[in-house]
Length: 415
Image (cartoon, rainbow, N blue to C red; front, side, top):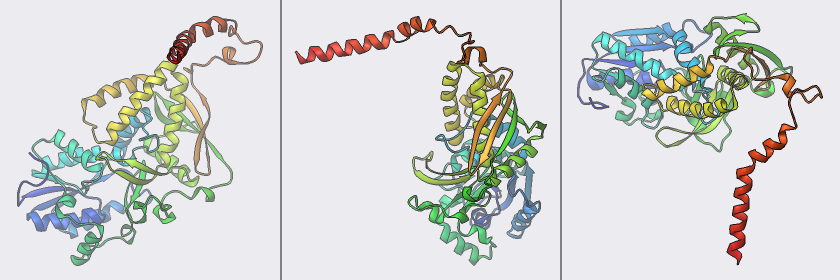
């Protein structure tokens, strides 16, 4: 089946539904445009930490807007274990900055939406992604890989409405929109939050404080640093300050600590999959704590050659995850290498949280490639410094010969 609409009517469509402006307008639009029954699906990826009624409100809103059925799936644990853990093992920071919070959640949502569509006998899955962003790739590629016979509808492309038009549409049809949704377009899960639109689309303007909801401004964070100790087993974070914790509990505590100290505020010019430059703003306290901690421990237990090659693998893994190619067989190959490298990433890391920063200050592992007797500058060091003469002579041989040859060529050219 081709992407986009190939029919004028559908019997049933599954809509990935957040309850925000875009998907609420889409819910009404799909019914009016295609005369379809719409089943809505909301994924609980840990958004709205403090509000247990959040998902009930979304369900009630969907049904008031005409949804014939609604699914809310608690996917927090699988999100951590099957998506975030692999990203931590791969030190996944897109363009060395962004921990992929939104990017990691999309394939999981797409897979579950495809399952619901098969269960409901739907002909299509719809989502609220634009034709300019990365999420369309993450949804479309994944859904069509798992369910090739399903159509994928992108109403935001088909209707041609901008955000102002959506607000007018919502007002016209009595679609309730939270005031918080009127200025920025946001997405969040337990790994991070993004904000777009309004003044954030102007790179020359400083992102206003009201675009942040989680983290305190670094200048308002505590004046006393806080050092935390994170334990890892085979590359996976398992404890905090020597207390073993379940994944969700550990992430929630790290989230609160990061927000308290203003950690995780990211603002960058990002290269989207479609080639556009985009000004992106994020709050990712958990990722900005865990990834540097993991990276330092991994580097400590791995050889120089392993670390150098792992960097290349990590970059490729991150690029593919960002661009929505989670189903590509190369991801399986990369994960095999990443997992093998992480077998020995066991130990602990101490991280100092202070005024927006999360800096590794100490680490320990039973597998650390470090020998104090060799490394110390004391006279008792067992390192044979006299071996340096021969090492220097051989290590620099090729470079010296190349330099001398280049010098002769320059000299010959002057004659």
